[in-house]
Length: 434
Image (tube, rainbow, N blue to C red; front, side):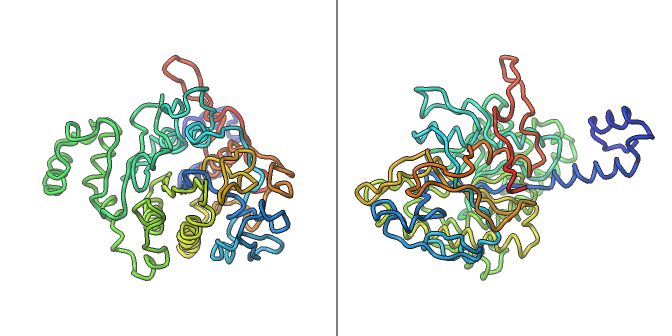
């Protein structure tokens, strides 16, 4: 029996015997498990709720107050159109899949953030409250906790709590599955450790950074590193480890690559989406399983569609198209799935130059993995008010993401009350993408 074979496969082997599961079968199972473990997701969290009309589901034939001020343009996929604000993504639409028929019922920012990032609806009257269920990244970290790596499984860019909405942590799973935060403008020292893991548990960060070699040599020699709890050990590696320092150092990238992603800041968020996406690519390439990138500012009420959206859309278009092209060029497109979405869509009718909250229809962008690209899944009505063909729920998107990661979304964890809680209460992988 092979030493690293999972307990599940051992049981299968024992049940089937030599006449059932042969050694080649066992090796194939191990190879499949290894391939699933070597997958990652980059979540582009479009905080505020992006408009579907001015991104991936334009309505050029609708009345003016519905279609908005922008035109629809052709993409590389026949009969598929994007908004003219996304020309670079339109040029590589054959590497993208757009879901146009996603909908849910949470119209408040706080409740929708929690719903989409955990798969669970938030209880009434707790719109801005604490996450009660683990975020997707925390779930991935929990499932993969025995897969020892030099970097943690869950990282957020540019901060631990991605802007005002946040995207969640370990909840009842515990603080060991909280995300680390890194900011591309701070280079290899850009580690933000959430919770209590500050000076008391990691000493002074400046002291650590000024005496990395000595400290690591002393700790490794004493064997103390093995005795640290999971999160403390990960934090130590993030602050002192070579893998983290190199992954966080964007100066190691060629200038042309950094320029392709874009270096300007988007809206008033004070950081470059392009450099954040480049950092996300470096992190998943180095072994991080789940990276959330904050791409906020999409809450376009008032005159937002005409005043604020064009510059933000240009920055997003450049950054996303550069990321997709880069993943393909580096042979990472099968390993990494890119998911871009926000809390909800926007109202079909424009209100004073903007659009309000609308969970009744929203567009979702997916790219990478073994999924079928170059297609649109589902459609909305002529005015974009609701799904017309193939209605889908955000949990179907999450189930699809979990499938890419090799995670059974029906698996249950036990909460502090001793109750089994499934990773997702409902949802199925989207068949058109498989």
